[in-house]
Image (cartoon, rainbow, N blue to C red):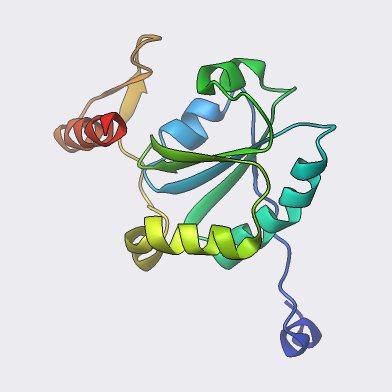
Amino acid sequence: MSWLKKMLGLSEKMQPMSINDSNFQEDVIRFRGACLLDVWGPNCQSCAQLAPVMQEIAAAYKGKVRVCEMNAAAAPRSVSRLAVRGTPTVVVYRGGAEIGRIVGFKPFSFWQQLVEKEFAQQIAEGEPKVKEERTQGTPDRPFKATTKAAKKALKKARAAART
């Protein structure tokens, strides 16, 4: 960031990670940390309004919360798996398990409060450096834990997803 931007208080825009059908499993579901997945549509006005807000969240929590975006038209398999009915929909993940979803446009302050409330521990620790060792499983069980620690984390994530 240049000294002029710092002086004027302007933040750099950081692009959210682009997600599609081929990398959804690896970059969202298998990710151990905090993740926001913005599902958007190409002709959606609210989605266009939400995009810069998600860029600000990505820049504000860089290295602490993963912010991703998925074009609903380009990733139909993942969108149907998520049962997204309208755009924009932001799906909130912790440890690979969905903990909530928000439909529609919300301002930066809303997302900031949500991140601070839901991901306080992850923000303090930062993004996980090492991914758990897992192998591909069956369609109904997308992955299988191969180590004792991974099995314990997987069991905990599934229990959290049920509540």
